[in-house]
Image 1 (cartoon, rainbow over the protein chains, first blue to last red):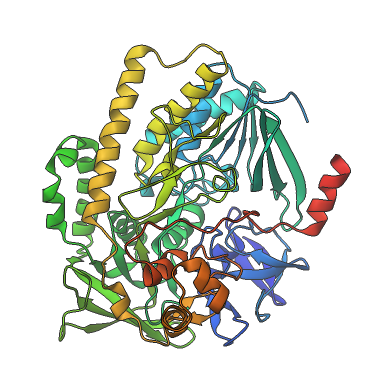
Image 2: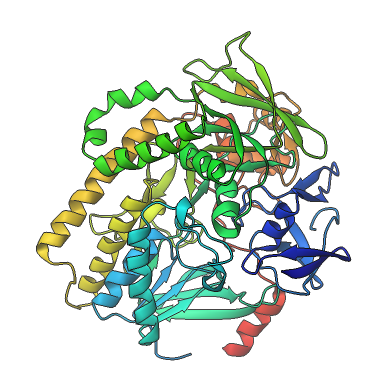
Length: 84
Length: 474
C-alpha cells in the first residue's frame, strides 16, 4: 500500500483513491475548522461542489480533498481556519 | 494542440458519453472535457482505469453494459486520434467566440499543480449533470453528515464507506441505490427516511407502466434492501442530528404531507454517519452566462430550455442530461444521442441515427421525461420543511449564516430572493458560491417560485498562475 503524509504522519491509501477517500478510509470525516465559529468540517458533498473538505497539498492551499487523487509522498496539511 | 475539433463536449457522464459516441460515429472530431479521472460521471463513477482491480465496484452499478459499450467506442476513437479526451480538466468558463465557442479549463492531471488550457470549436455541447439538493436541518454541518451523492461517490470512486451505522433521509428514488450500495459493503443502514408518500406514484400510473426498465431497477434495489433487512420509512424525515466532533445520533419524525413533523412521533437513533438528499440541482454554471433561455421543471428547478433536438436558444450550443431537467441516466443517454445528432445535422454532416433508431430514441426520451415528471411530483420538497429549523440552524455552511439571520433579512431587510439575502447576510458568498444553500435560501424567501441559481462567471476556482499561463499562450 502507498502512503501520503497528513500533517506529518503517514496515511496509507489504495492507488486510485482521492485524498478525502484515504482520510475517510482511516475513519476521519473532519479535518479543518470553519473561519467564524471554528466548527469541525470534512467531507460533505464528495464531488467538488461544497468546498467543505479543503486542505493544503504540497504547499498549495484551497485544494478540494475529494477531487485530488492521492499520490505517494504527497504532503497534506489540514486544519487551518477558513481555507484548509 | 493537434487538429481543431468540430465540437467540444463538456461532461463525460451518461449524456456526454452518448453524445460523444454519436458525434464520433458521424465523423466529427470531438474534444471532451471532464473533471473526473475516469469517464462515467456521477452515475457511472469509477476509480481510474489503473485502480479497478484494487477497488472493485462493478456490483454497485446499474446499466454497466451500456457504460462498457460507450466506453469501448470512446476508447477506440481516442486511439484513432478522433477523440481528444481531457480527463481531470476543470472547466471554469465557456464563452462565445466569433461563430463558435472557447472553453477555458485547467489541466489538473498533476494536481495540485494546474495549467491553463483553452479549447476552441464551432459547436459546444454541455452535459454537466447535477448535484444533490440539500435542505438544512439542525446539525447538518456536523462531520459525518454527508450528501447521499457524497456517500455514493466515496463508495463507487474509492471503495470507502463513511460510517458503520448510517441513517439516510430526504426524498426520491436515489435513496434506494445508496442504501443498497452501503449495505453491500457491510454498512448497517439503520433507517431510510423517505419524506414522500409512495402512494403519490399512483396518481401517475401511465409513466410508471411505460417504463418497465425502471421497475426492474426498483425491484433490484428493493430486493437488495430486503436481503439486508433495511426498512424504508415513508412520510418520515430526519429533522436533526446530534454530536460534537462527529455526528452521534439523528432525530427522525413522522411528517404530515406538507412535511411538518407529527407531534409525539420523534425518535432518536444512534449513528456514526448520515446521508441526506432532496432530489438534485442541475449544474448550469456554464450555461447561464452563455445566455441560454431557461424554463421551469416540475421539481422546482430552472433548467435549460431545449428544442426536440436538444438545441438551446444559443446557436451552436446544445445541452443534454440533467441540465435540461433531472431524469436519470437512461434519459441522459437518449438526450446525448439526440444532441449529437442535431450537431451532425447542423454542421452539414450525414446524420448517424437512422429514422427507425431516431424514432426509438425520441420515444425513450419522451417516456423517460414523463417518468421524471411523475417522480418530481411524487417526491416534492415538503412545503413546511423550514419548520424543522431553529433560528440557530446554519443555512449557509461556508459563511455560517443561520436561519434566524436569513429570516431577519426577509422580515426586516425586505429581501425577496436569495440574491438579496446574500447581499444582506453573506449567505451564498463563500467558497461554494451558494451551490449548497442556494435552493434552501430560495425556499425560505420565495417558496412558490422556481429556483434559478446565481450567475457564476467563474465556474470553478482557478489560480492566478494558471491565468498567467493563458496570457502566455495567446
